[in-house]
Amino acid sequence: MNVKSLHSHRAHGAPLVGSGAPVPARVGASPLRQRAHLRSVRRAVSLGPEDGCDIMSQRVVLCPEAPIKELARVFEKDAMEPEFIQAVSETLTSIEPLLADGAHTDTLQRLLEPERVLIFRVPWTDDQGILQVNRGYRVQMNSALGPYKGGLRFHPSVNLSILKFLAFEQTFKNALTGLQLGAGKGGSDFDPKNKSDGEVMRFCQSFMTELHKHIGPEIDVPAGDIGVGGREIGYMYGQYKRLV
Image 1 (tube, rainbow, N blue to C red):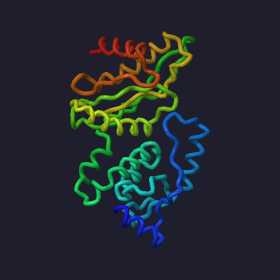
Image 2: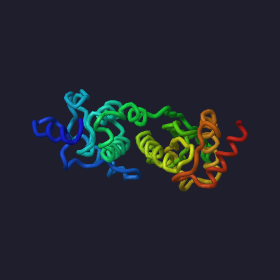
Image 3: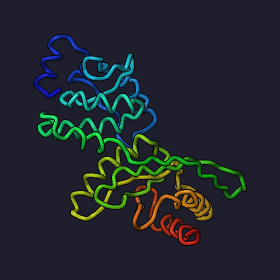
Image 4: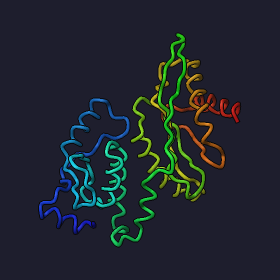
């Protein structure tokens, strides 16, 4: 469905997103703001079966001009990932003329679905000897041009939706460099702030103990991001070298 038919469909009373629909909270939003945006998602208008997706009473916030059929596919699979849906919505809106004839549908579907998503627990002990458990992620989004390449983020706000959003955008950023680089993104909800060097080291070693099974110079090359600087990279690389 292109923009013209979308507006025509709206005129006949189809339940499409209105121009005043709010946009989901971006990365790093406070918990209060995130809850407010989740309420706005519930108030947003649903896509119906006539838009290519029978999703009952589930709802999502989309850019009003975005190609509805392509977004409906994403929403059907990823309804609880507002940051990812927002990124896809904005991207599809910007390239809508390329989608009008349906020639790039197959390519687009591959771009929107990660090749692999890894979710794993990261157990570590704090300075008091108490076991702590965080969640680790690696979204290996696209390797069409080369090995996955993208940062690791350690921050309490990290979740699958945010990392898929970042990995999706990383695909285009890496492609524009002209280098043979795929795209990925990863991290954990671990907060390195106010942690001792020993606690950060034990967390990073535990994180890499699992992640090393899925990375390598010809497979996936992580880098730094928020919460991951030289100290964290050093601890993780040291563990990686010990294990491989």
